[in-house]
Length: 380
Image 1 (cartoon, helix red, strand yellow):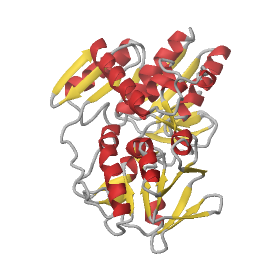
Image 2: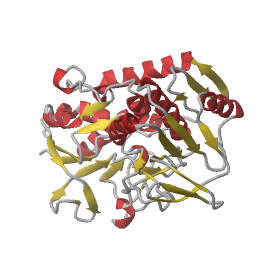
Image 3: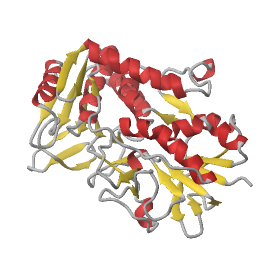
Image 4: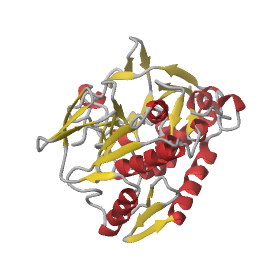
């Protein structure tokens, strides 16, 4: 007799399972996908979406269609609590869903650091769909006159956002002061050459990079830094690090230091073998993993295999994370910075490689017709 698999979130690590949902159904299992949105946006192409390099339909998966076209059910909603002893998921709208096996790929949110993210002038860079609205807001603002745009966060996300905001302003023939509040140091933890290439790219295009400063507070367009100084801005973009949802801790499940669902080498909860997870929402017990998409992508086939094994009593596969991974920054001007195993390369070739890798990933899993449906090829 078939069992019930529930996928919570349609993120990168669930893509293989979503693409192969027909196999679960063919074997007699019932599958439900729960997501607050019909779409999942690919984070690797988010900065390009902001700049206009990509259309919305280029960077998203129609996960509702991926589910329903393959015989699964789709619930538009959000899981707010897990009751593992009863194998029960509580939804934000008040409903409940039972499961035999459940897997979470709900991503992460931006750490706000006490900044009120709902204020009109503040935009969080996650979920990635926020960048679609940010693009529209910047274009509307530029029509009114010069703007001051501030990005808080000196990591890869902050660098890419600044570079692609520059592209957006340039292509709109507008005027804007772009300021990156980089915290202690731009791209701290990366090799000096990576930092130097990114810093030179931004400053050569007029981006003001503020190091040794952290954003302390924001109110009605006024920024205050930890040293007491401040400035005014029209829009503040928060890219100051990510954190998993607190749903796992609040549900009494074992979590890692970052609050992510603590999983073993099989991507399975260390306490509840019916619960699995992948991507940014988990904490890998064997060793901490950076919150980068490459790990979620590589968890794809392992998670698919193990979910099927959990349903049918098969042998599990271990997820063995790579020690080194390829990082390519999209600088927004047709150039990129590549870093892997100590090798660093800047220029147009890294961006072309990144574009090829990203488009190949989309082509592999964008099986719902999203990119080829003319009604969905809207321009932002």
